[in-house]
Length: 255
Image (cartoon, rainbow, N blue to C red):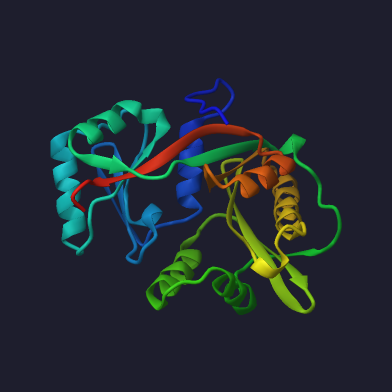
């Protein structure tokens, strides 16, 4: 996929905000065009410094203040930089930061996405104990990370829908969608390894996209590690054929 830095028809910063709102942090602090997100645990997206728009910079004084903020909680500064801000990436690298694996933000027009093929996906409007237990079973986490994840779900304030697909009496695939300003953000897609490549995730996501259309959404997005070829192939089949930007996490090289 080719990275796209801007588009006349897609507000990339609205996509950024929607993705952030679909996975809220326990606490957030504004700092000179950035938002410092903190939840504890190992999830970088809710324990990192994120830009709020195109005017965010990697100035030394801003980074120093952010580093002190995270250090006060015993954490190392992590800076999440979309490819939209190449100048910030260069500034960070010049100051000794190193970037990690690239993650893609994929976009779909809901008018072009596929409808569910059948009735295998069950939709619910809250994350009940069964859905949460299935998600935690299929995505191994430590005790702290489990607590952080469950707390994160309870903090989502926007319209949300949870999908699950049952195989032989057991949930074998899950995902959820959050709606924000006409954008459906797909999150937490996971399938039991024993039944992968059998179309379960396709059905879960397709059902969520259909629900989003009935709620008036016109576009959808999701984020996936750029070298995850099987997942990207699945998302392309569902209509997510366009990468609108990517991002990396940067840490001090000495961290």
